[in-house]
Image (cartoon, rainbow over all chains, first blue to last red; front, side, top):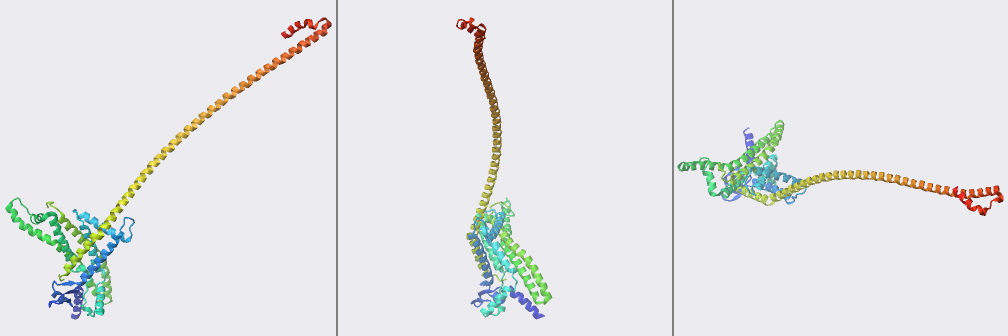
Length: 298
Length: 156
């Protein structure tokens, strides 16, 4: 019983561990052989699986869309062009609906976010053991590593590094455009002069730190909530897939039930991954819109 | 969940994909979409124009047909009137011709009558002379009484 619990938690932990390359505490660079080593590396490490899948999926995205864009004509569109145009038009409508400023960056960024996040989330629908098992076999046969030490997390959006990476970029753009559009003074004023304001100078002086505290927290909460929302949803979804996958080792009846559960959860998950991609995109548009708004006096 | 260099890598990757989309994906597709929109709008406008023109043409056709009908009935009226006139003319002509024929026939008859009367008169006088000479025999000298007989013959 104890050993079974051990393997079960080991199975889950194995699934939740990234393939990490980084600097060992003793100074040399190399792959981490287990979770402890990965943790010991601290910041000087990189998740190879996250990078590999996100870059691969991103390349698929830009390859596919570039292929359609290069041949885009005003004549009768083909299948791919039709699909790409449908997506682009959908994004364009969303951007026009929420973004009132004028910036050629926002719509392409929204498109990138939507498709890239969707593709990264989509990796969640591939049965949890397939790609890690393939990677384990490759590691074992080609590189002669113990397959149990090959870690391979295939859903980049279950890695907070991926989601924070995006939200950080969005946050930087928010700050950049806030300062650019409103000026440094305008941006500072937005952070300090409301929600509380007064004509009385003394009272106003008291309000400024209070306002700044409130506004600064809400400013920081934007990228944080943006990335944690996606990460949390995907991580939880992945976790449930892993738990369901564990049922397959519990005999015929449990296994069949697990199969049904996996099917149901996967179908439901199609909705979640699309929704999360859409939410990430929409919130990015809204944040960019806020950064572009000038003195509308909240 | 270890936060590490992956964070920086992901940010750079994201920035690259956004840049690529902004440079090479978004503009051509938007251009194609706008062009198609314009094309469709133009097509619709052309269709509308064609429809309008068809309406005008139909209206025009109706007008032309109406005009043609009017003209035709006018021509028919004219023709009828002309036919009546011709018929009347013919009638008048025929009547004149008939009158002429009748007149010439009458004058011929008159001439014929005169001629017959002349002949009769001539024969009558000679008959009278012969009858009288038979009755009177030698008593009457033809040369002496010729003047007298002429006068009688003229009274016939």
